[in-house]
Image (cartoon, rainbow, N blue to C red; front, side):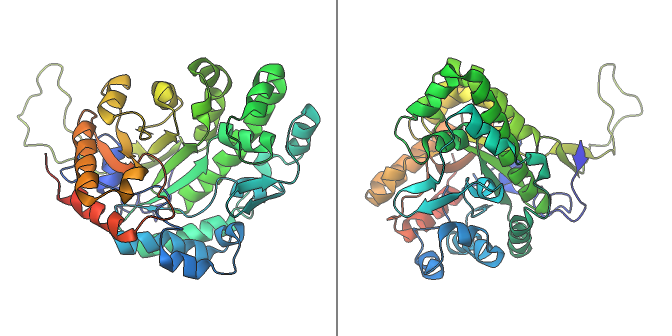
Length: 389
């Protein structure tokens, strides 16, 4: 285990008692915490103004800009967390992969990775060589952000190995990821090497964010919904577990709740009160799109909380997870443009279904659409914070 620096927001007590962090650890809060995937970005006019003339990946690697973009929705909406503004391909770029994000299309790679020789070319960069200097812009952006957030947690994020590998093999976005899934079965040895390399690169990226001050981690598997449960368990889950192993060892201490005054003797089988601090891991969330059939397997790779997309009702997700795993989600993004009475009823339904899990963090079942009216998001936050069962 690796203890976070005493100045880290979790260790210093700034964020450890927040609604978000406690919910991720399975402690139900009277007020349900809320944040939105892709809350920082295209739906905000202040974001569009700031980004004029700056390419996406350049914005991600400019610490002051990345920090300001991360902070914008926290100031505007009053959400319970910031989500670090970056992109899942940033660690690939830092590892020397030629990639650019084309507006309206997404990440596009100069050389797709489709053969054993292509994977060997990637492996010329050892992920272990991606050190503090490599991730310096990321760490600086996190430090700038957490200094402004204070007691509001920052969530670090990274792409899961399958999603990164799918982008690498396809050379860009794909509807069915057929080339990636073909490599998985046609050349499993090469596929395994690609997944291991992707896991270590994205894991190092996530670890850099947490060490710099993020209070939680979220691993996104955007394309895992294209997989069968069997393929996921056999060909993907081991790499996702490997990615999370880069951060699973990070811990911090919190004071034990004060025990009631104890009698002179301890009953047989009872646990004596202790003044020893409680050691907790930095909470990890795992989210995938179209992954309703994979929820338990996604939890088993090492997550504390499972994010659920809009296709699976939260009470059903909680049932599939045995009613013992905190959940995050899952307002349908399409509802954000519906009349308020329709949207508000949907949000309350999600909140109600979320009570089937030990704890719940309200979020979307995917990202904020770029055309969303920001005032609607603010209104949703106010609704969630004011809701009581």
